[in-house]
Length: 338
Image (cartoon, rainbow, N blue to C red; front, side):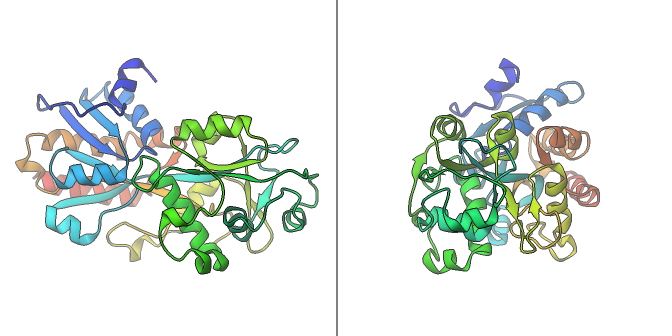
């Protein structure tokens, strides 16, 4: 990432907009590596001045609803009522696999296999050792050490990493009946054990030095940090690895025909080879682009991210919406600008 782009993606105070090529956005942090790629590529064609503040979906929501920013990118989609009241259009931009990572001596990436039941037990505090008989039974080929499991979870609800936690807890609620019974509501009440960290960077640093640790990160961050990724054991006893193929299978498993608002279920989807924990980053822009000074730039930028930027999305560890959905979104952006 170049110094200039890094500055545009910082969490610094909001900058004032100055011209028709200046765009100001805010929202979740999951999109940051993909956004960096988009900004670098668009300089060759659009040459817009895009400032994006990764301050978390809740803060991004507040700013787009108040009209402070030109756009938002949210991991927690706005409701139909919010969109209608503020005359906003929301659409998926990219999808990211959330993965569990571990630091267990002698265990390499994708060797450890866990189910939703086992993960729920770990984070609920009922499974406390890596050589617990239940984990050993799911991993008969591994020699698991007699060490404590040390769960790591992200900071308080409302922070920049909330989207990651939403994805993980949504999966545990969907895949684990015991978890639903123990923690039916309140994200901040679902972490019975473990240590809280404040950023993805802190998760990575802690994972590398804390023996026995388990945490969660977007796939791209886990791969670049060279952390050991956990494979998911499906209901048929088959191991599914987190990669571009299993992420693609998850996006393809969404019933797009029955999701007219383009906000579909993203966790514990059925099908072979489907990664079970996926979060979406949703773009949010005003519908009346023609009446906004930044309207032409917004239309051009987001059409770019969906068309030319789709390859960047994949290279940065994400998955774009299917081609037919991207075409539908581009048509809507054209409509709002005409």
